[in-house]
Image (cartoon, rainbow, N blue to C red; front, side, top):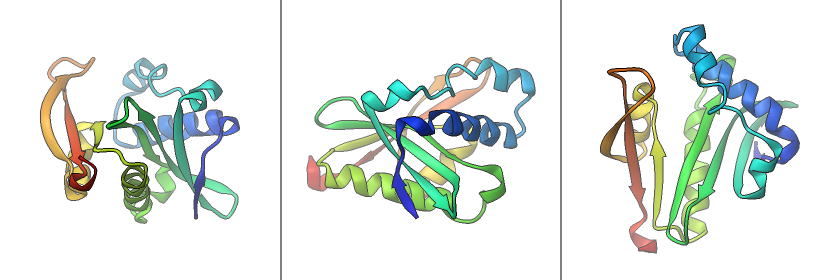
Length: 152
């Protein structure tokens, strides 16, 4: 079941983001270098919104949206707890985020993707616009966009 994420979820969502990132075989040093970027604070919910996927009383995954302006929204986070990867939770979360953006009249949903997640987002209609160099030399992050024709 997908329900709204709230500020009191911040610590657990951060833990899920860190665990999920580590699942993809990044080194402990890389994960640590990204800790600040992957930390969600309670005040994040003052300007961002999001949802969490619940299985019984456990958060299995989540996403956060950042409304940049009246037309554009950024998918800032989308992570699934490692023990739930491969169970279509990421798919359900991204579809929920897309539906939310459509319903709220956004024209564009952007994401700065992990390189390994680019095929996942492409499968959901996102197009790669460019590549942004990450903090790891030689590693580039796909900048992707999904346009909602009905809202443009």
